[in-house]
Length: 300
Image 1 (cartoon, rainbow, N blue to C red):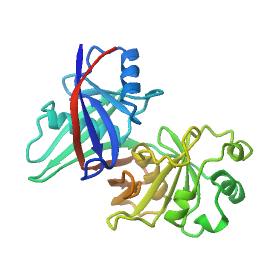
Image 2: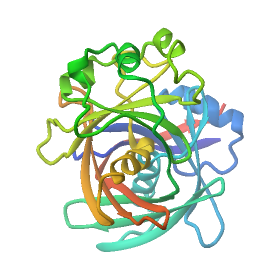
Image 3: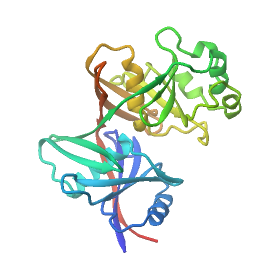
């Protein structure tokens, strides 16, 4: 049987930029094994499979990398929503419209804002952050990242462990140059005080950006990634927002975060969030997307 798919570049206005995601828009009937094989065939960082859901939800999502099933991220959810809107799977008129997706037990509110020229798609998350201030000492961090002392930001912010479901070690750096010189050193990590913490990735960031619209530049590092990898950061954004919220006044905030460089596949994400000391953190992550390919693939 043939299954239709779309290739979507997310968080960009230009084709062949941003995060590249494959979306199978009518995946009902596929087994877990078939989804895994199709994800290996597309060989993108994530492949999204869209299936029917309950009457009050537009769709149910499952996300696979070439290595296995993964959790939802803003880039995969926005890709699915955009692909369905472009293929007619969701009716999206001019102006604002809403729907909901579900992945596992998680419900994901989707907001569309269509104008004559573009379609802005956002996904909402409600999270309860857990923050741990016991992080590796400065010399340990430098060894883990392969950096020098002048590269670490220590005055305006400090490293923290933050979890909004998936834990990250978030490390502020002083420049884009430092962000792209940083690399994960597994031996230094294993010998550090953080080796017992179940963290899969390190999020490094700085306030220096290429795009004048962006407030921060983000990059993910971790075991199994090449030193030259620059993977999508959407899944880490709620944790980054919780990290920033430590120093922000209560209320509604908007910022833009950048991933990647203009020479590669740069993404620009719009982030809106509401901070309140006595309530969970509400985060909306979105941006524009570009449909670059459509076709059909035979299930193995």
